[in-house]
Length: 366
Ligand code: DP6
Image (cartoon, rainbow, N blue to C red):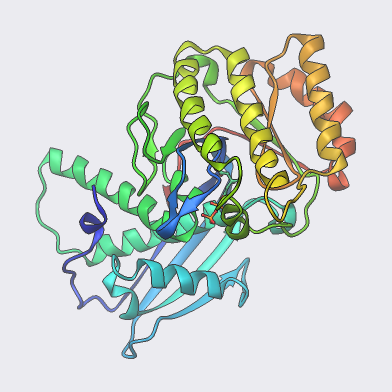
């Protein structure tokens, strides 16, 4: 599919008002997206686990209006929120060509997260994908309904998900991986079915070792991000190691494909941890340079390595562009690993806080 396929050509402009609601999850990348070209096109492919419980719930109410400006109000956890407005304004500007009814309605966007906002967990993936899905449901309601054959219903379901992901990407790159579960690939590559324009549900074989894979998110630093992702991605322009890094991501995705099929957890751990450390290495070696890990991030990593060696465990860590640690492990280790987290790792979490999550199936209409 190309950008042209996502332009809504005609719609029923008689509909006065309505309301839609979606819950959309966060995701955690195994091969990281870091570096982008113009129009939110990634420099390299990425793949992520969709999460189950860390979600944004968004309701959009739309009412016909006369003026031609964008018009919307944003409420976050029941209170009006001015801080989110510029990001949504930019999002509307980027997607207007594909959603022509945006100027016809006043939108009330009411949103909340299942995780604490000040947890340092990026809410842009779940937040942007939830709005994109709401807009797609509105598009569907405004579309002229014709009777569809079964194959057309399937095609329209795929179109809905692809366009929702396409729109979400224009809000925040990683958001395009939050529409479906359980693994989603984004960015053209030779090993998997994929697109630069939207996330695609991973089509390869996945071994049962990865069923309900666990993610305990250890909140080391709940503060505002030290480096916004927009600034972070820009650091890859002219980065001395960028070219190598982008090709490494292609190689790691190809390796991961084989690992997902065979269920080789030892090899999985190596790729996932190396990706996390490479992401941080890119930040440490850019100009300007940043260290986004905190002392407690390193304490946790060392404890995880010790525990893994002593218990022949398959526990591993991954990181986003911040200090929090995602602890990944197979479901059959759940009981022991949570004991370990409570006894050894909680001490390194801010106020002892962590979030228990696992791999999920994607967004849901409410
Ligand atoms: C480190 O999706 O937040 O989490 O496209 O600028 O909104 P924008 O960036 P964003 O980047 C997230 C990068 C990452 C790695 C990943 O999720 O792949």
